Length: 339
Ligand code: KG4
Ligand code: ZN
Image 1 (cartoon, rainbow, N blue to C red):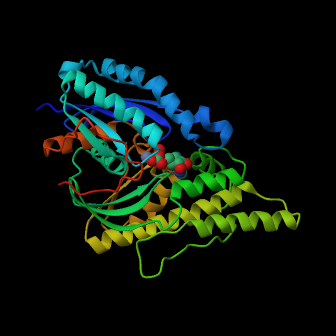
Image 2: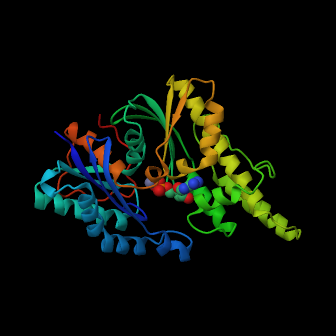
Image 3: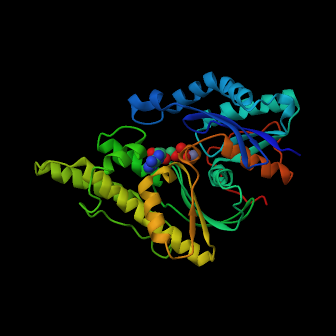
């Protein structure tokens, strides 16, 4: 099987479709971002997201096929994100994928969005094979996983409250930096001093690989309130840099400790926050001399895309996992082992 898979992703605020060969080779990766649509509201408005997906999805799919020079009959399967995510947004992709699978008699594969993020590293690094440790850091997740094989995961730790990306978004909002917060904080932090303010690094008792970011977010809020009450001038760049430092420090430290514990020599970082350059620099600095190699996808494959979904779809299809045509969206879909 040539393994040409069309991957469809509509779980949040990106309408995306891609064609991937053999789970690893990207032919096209078309992404329509809704950032401008949600920007005036300071965050994703679910109802607007669904409607916009609906308007764009057919066009995005057509574009993905046309740019790849692929027609329907060349495809070996349709992969679609069915969770976790916003239910109305997920339903657009799931419904379109089911309709195509039915009309074109193609196998349908349901894909977990979180698993998709991990597989972005298979696209970026064609020779990467399990086992490795993966840090998934996005707007919805902060999970540390031992990837034992395709479809075989052991959860080592996760956030107890806010996801790292969510913390970036919330802190950006209180600093008046706008949405999405991650790239804004990163840009502001470049002008600031990461050592200016000492924000807390939370440790979760008896869970060395878990995270907690809500206390950090509160600490930033308290700092801002206190400074305002005292009439002090707030240096937003220093706040952004100090906050970012607090987040990336715990991410790097716990991930490298997990890699050592699992005795793996490779770490694959993924999800929107993996695009952050401070995170990448600290990983590079801290992993030097440890024998642990830290891998990332390029930024376009860190944030949501259809290619990562097509990659999972390929491996699931190879393992014989197709979805029925009554596949439904599952907003809180857990990561399951299938391999
Ligand atoms: O993976 P993603 O596109 O969507 C989810 O599955 O959540 O991740 C989006 C998240 C947002 O919270 C965004 O602020 C964050 O990733 N993000 C970043 C950066 N780029 C995106 N966070 C820190 N630094 C960045 N450069
Ligand atoms: Zn995502």
